[in-house]
Amino acid sequence: MTDKPKPWLLSVAEMGGHPNPAARYRELGYQVEMVPSVRKAQAWLKTQSPAVLVTEFHFDPGFRDRMSNLESLLAALQRYGTQTKVVVIVDPAHLPRLQQVQQRYPIHAVLQIPVQAEALRAALGD
Image (cartoon, rainbow, N blue to C red; front, side, top):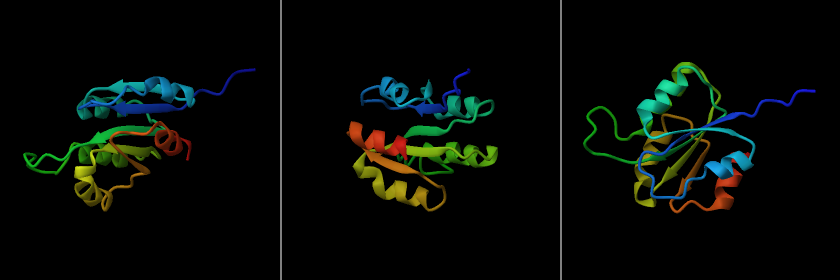
């Protein structure tokens, strides 16, 4: 009897500043790939299709063609046609900007910093 393979969870932690949740992701039954940038996440997505993407959102008025780090990553998910659930970690001060992104891209759950363990478990368990 073979065990069913665990689904992939891709975690993008560009800014950090919160505890590394990799152990919690594994406890919840995921294989975990952690990358430090959207660029590396996009490269990983070319060969893998995660069940869940957990990523940070940060607004940067210096971006010329977008408002955040998240838009190119979400566009890549659409391009590859995945059914990935997107969970976004956001500073409460940036929520209005994230809401603008949510009008264009589907986001499964939004978790405010500091991320509560129970909120993370609920977002990943849905």
